[in-house]
Length: 211
Image 1: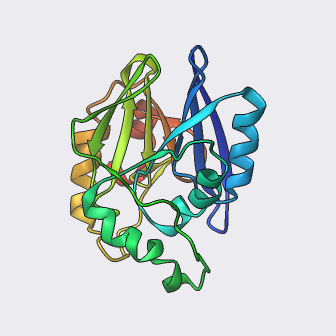
Image 2: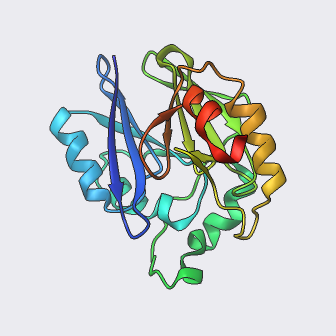
């Protein structure tokens, strides 16, 4: 069974997700936002082994807990990021622009994500969907077997991601939503980078930006 443990962490109230195949106990962290020790504690409580960290994008509030997570793992986890967001990661996620201290962005990404790529966690497959507009290298992770989309900062409940930061573009973001979110089944759960969960169908009907 795919288990999902969500956290809301850090100065931007960012959602981080600890996911695991409960049979194999293999685990991954999607966007280790902040307070990595809290994510580690939850994994240790379940005896899950964090082997991977997947980034939807590399803004500081989505990577701020990566160093603590990595330091607490027996083996260094693989870190996955789209190459177009690597310069932002090198700039520590733009933390300085917001006056936020981030001394250590964590281990360097070694897995280059690309559109259509399949990531595996135990028995589960996750499709990488490139969805730029919030950042150039933004991706989402879609698990068809569990009908769930980890959308990062592309779309939120009744809202959409910011496009006023470096690398953002409104038209690009809207195209990403139309092509990479609204093409999924209405029942697909959306677990986003901020705010509460929603579904594709709810956003298709109720999101004021999509009218």
